[in-house]
Amino acid sequence: MRIKPYFLSSLLLLQLHLNYPGCCLATVTSSAVKQETTESTLDRIAQEVELESVSDRSYDDLAAILEKDPSNYRAHLLLGNCYELLGLPGESYEQYQLALKYGPNQLKAIVGMIKAETKTGRMAMASRLVNDAMKRFP
Image (spheres, rainbow, N blue to C red):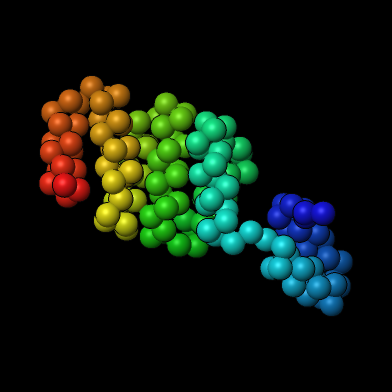
């Protein structure tokens, strides 16, 4: 049985409120063992992006990952993909830029930036990005 992180955090708060510190330690230990790793979380979100069906939980997970590690290029890339699916080219472009900044060899980030520029009608910038990508990734 897989325990949802939301339930564990609620349970932990309740236990703290009731002043059962021994119980809290057991819950935290159990939680640490059962929670996904960052990479497995990102893998799950990548699958959702591929299926174009991203859950609310995944948006929360991306926010939590980026709060802990703002330089996680893969989380920025996936958040850019999510914004693209939502039809938000400006927001997706910003995330792709950050993905490129923190993971400089990310062709997917440049492709995402090109798509965002095309969707906003800025063809000259999209063309420059294509030329830049061709130089960076011959």
